[in-house]
Amino acid sequence: EVQLVESGGGLVQAGGSLRLSCAASGFTFGDYSIGWFRQAPGKEREGVSCISSRGGNITSADSVRGRFTISSDNAKSTVYLQMNSLKPEDTAVYYCAAAVGGWGLRVASYDYWGQGTQVTVSS
Image 1: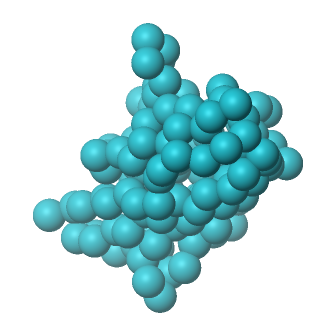
Image 2 (image 1 turned 90 degrees about the horizontal axis):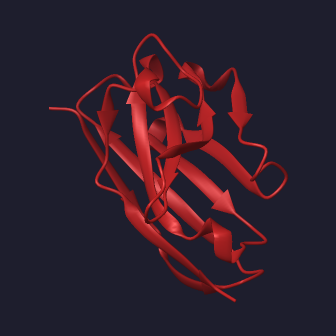
Image 3 (image 1 turned 120 degrees about the vertical axis):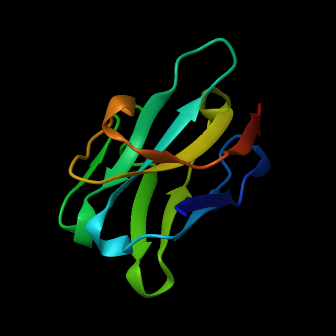
């Protein structure tokens, strides 16, 4: 059974940092691309950053580029999202997702999803 479990969310002041983790199990980690997405209340889910299978390619949304960094630890089957210089507009539920055969920042490209972790940035 494929499982993706996010952790690391919380409440932080603007300008602060958080590191999210996505622990994967039930599939061959290196064969999947992993993406981070977020969904704020009343808004559509949007892609934040993703890393291709085996870590060869990374892309990020314009809104987070230079502030958020995605990385993976294949030995731990875990993908991280380091978030620095957080802004109130980064407040959302953050999800990780896995894609076999696809990658990028489109929700439709992903096959499996975690339950999400809340990130709240206060001003």
